[in-house]
Image 1 (cartoon, rainbow, N blue to C red):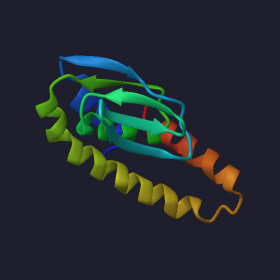
Image 2: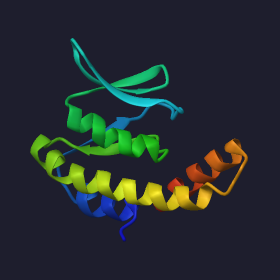
Image 3: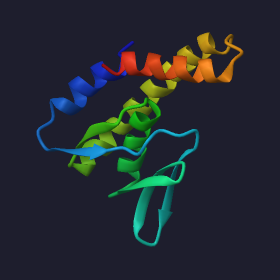
Length: 123
């Protein structure tokens, strides 16, 4: 199985038209919402504006993985193509991490362990 870092290098960094987005600080509550002005990705009370729901979903994966900034394809069609594979990969990795972490009773330690594992596999 690919790591998030491998996916990022192969599918994103190999793409030419990229922009860098700074992500809000990771919080326990991450959600995507649409308002009159467009799409927003919230992390607690902080948010960033997104050009589309696809961009918000893409950024959410990397925000949940604990990254602070990320390169994003400018091409919305390409983003739409790679998004299902990215979300599936993230879901599979989450299941594996959670299966090991659930045996840790202390919630703070469990959260820190998950963050460190995500940081390691996002390299």
